[in-house]
Length: 154
Image (cartoon, rainbow, N blue to C red; front, side, top):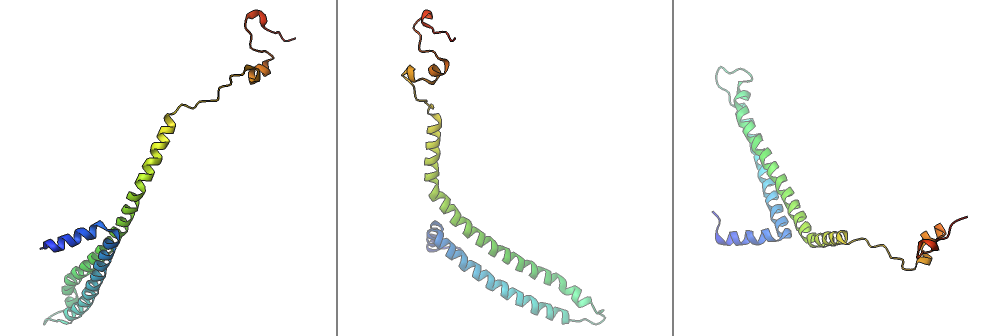
C-alpha cells in the first residue's frame, strides 16, 4: 500500500525527468543487488539439492530433481535483468519525451510559417515598361496600338 506521502513524492518525481532518472537508477541498483543475491542463492541451492541423495538413486537423479528449482531461479534472475533494462530504457525515453515536448512549439511555428508561405501566391515582378520588355526586344516589335502600326521584319 502506498501512503499519500509516497504518492505525492512519486508525483513530484514523475514530473521532473532528472528526478525520474535518479529514482529509476536507484531502482536499477536495488534490482542488481537482488539479482546478485538470487544468483548466490541459486548456486548454494543447486549445490545443496545436488548433494541430497536418496537410497537407490542413480548418479544423475539428484541433479534431475534439482533442475526445476534451478530453472525457476534462473527465470527469476532473467526477469530481474529484464526489469532493470526496462527501467533504464524508460528513463531514457522520459528524457527524450521532455526534449521533444520542449522542441514542439518551435517545430509547430516553423510548420505554420511553411504552410503560410505555401498558400501565398508566387508573384513575379510585373514589368510596366514595355520598351524594356524582353519579348519586345526579342521580336523586334514595340507595343502596337493598331494593326497598321505593326513593323514587319525584312
